[in-house]
Image (cartoon, rainbow, N blue to C red; front, side, top):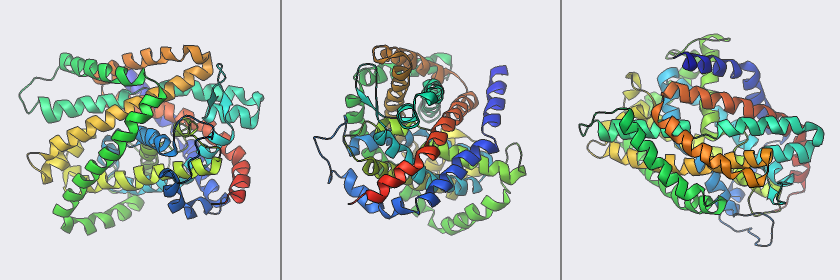
Length: 450
């Protein structure tokens, strides 16, 4: 319990107003500075993803679609199912409004960070072209900023660990499958789930980025489609409740009447805003710096093109998938129970789709979680490669695989606070470098022609 309290205190401290100002204030600055131009290219971005502008002779390893799928396989995951339910269970319906704010601002932030990931690619110790915050910090700002790049990479080693995803997948298997079947959940059953996840994850991640992106390109569109159809069915079944909860999301966002957490600086409303922004950042990772590592590997020589592709991520992730989850939890009324995490979402599915709803969610949770495991391992190896050289990056996978067991056998609150803390620390170098280098992106954007 002492370590849980420690990480809870650290997480609350680092996610204070200075970081919110950096993430949200910085994101707003980037929107205004770009004069909303990236948003005007939204449908053009869809054409890019479809492969209309692909050039096989460009630098990089994977297609625009594979890069977006790889990034989305990390973000469209447990942040959308468990993260949203955590936000609602603590903050009430109003937390969703602030997640939306985070998503809209995150679209602009993702555009800038991923454009920079292509614009200022670097080379690893083996001479391979690489992208990501650690590279655009050094290539864009110069060697004197290397300490910032090193700080990002060290935080990324922990931030990329899969402990939250594994924790929630284990909880889902226990609550939806094992307990109803009469099994007694214990450390041993959690350990066995961890072993199974280790086997599946090892097969994919030891095959490198191309195998990860290949699997992600197949899993991500499928899982989003299945999840979307399921939640739309729940919304149709409870359609008479929808107008009330749409109004409540907006009303609650500025009153905080259903906020149940601890109040920090700014009172209940300030605490609610921070909660929504935190869960939004966990959901779409905009400004954190993870996704630019995937987008930096895209096969393109156009920074703006990849930035536009990356901009679609928060739109799909936070504005679409998170909203569907939130509405399912709210209109079924389960948000007023004492349930938390993925169990709350499972209750919403079971409420409106009895007999098979919770099993459908379990399938989605398994696919969401397992695909996230693949991508986060890639992010961690990139960070270790930057710190200790290309030939040593494989050692991260071994640490990563061991951490799966940690996630399967520890508490939800510890896992959330651990990852939240390091996400916050990663955001500091990413956003500082992005704001400083923003004029370079605007210069390229003004020259960009469809």
